[in-house]
Length: 196
Image (cartoon, rainbow, N blue to C red; front, top):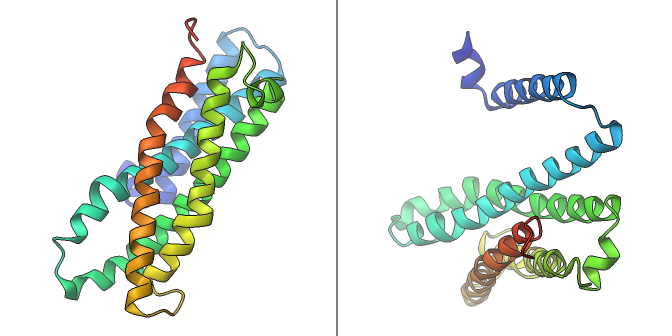
C-alpha cells in the first residue's frame, strides 16, 4: 500500500502533507492553542523555509552537481540535459526564489519588524542584512541568471558567441549567489539567537 504512494511524487507529497497536518493537530490539541494568528505566522514561516530549501537546494545542485558534471557528459548527451532537466530545474529555481522572498517579507510584516529590518535597527540588523542579501540574490536570479540561461538553453535564438558569453554570465552570478547564500543563511539564523 505504501509503495503505491511512494511511486508517484504527487502522492508522496500529499502523504507528507497529511502526516504534517496530523502532527499540527496533535500539537494544537495537546499543547497550548495560541490562536489562529500563531498558526498563520507558523504557516508563513513554514512556507518561507520550504521555498528557501527548494531555492538554495537547486542553487547548490547547479553549482555542486550539474555545472561540474557538464564537462564530463559526452556532447551527444548534453542536449538532453539542456532540453529536459535544466528548464524544469530553472522553473523551480526561479519561482521558489519568488515565493521565498514574498513569504519572508510577508512574515516580517506580519510580525511587525519589516521596517526595522530594512532600516537595520539595533534589534533587527542581522535579519535585515539577510533580507538585503536575499533580495540581491533574487534579483540576480531574475535579472541576470534566467535571461542568460534562456540564451544558453536556446529559448532565445542567438549565435555561439552570445551563448558562450551568456553561459559565462549565468555561471558568474550563480557563483555570486552561492557565495552570498552563506552569509544570508547566517544572518537569518543568528537573528533567532540571543547573541544577535
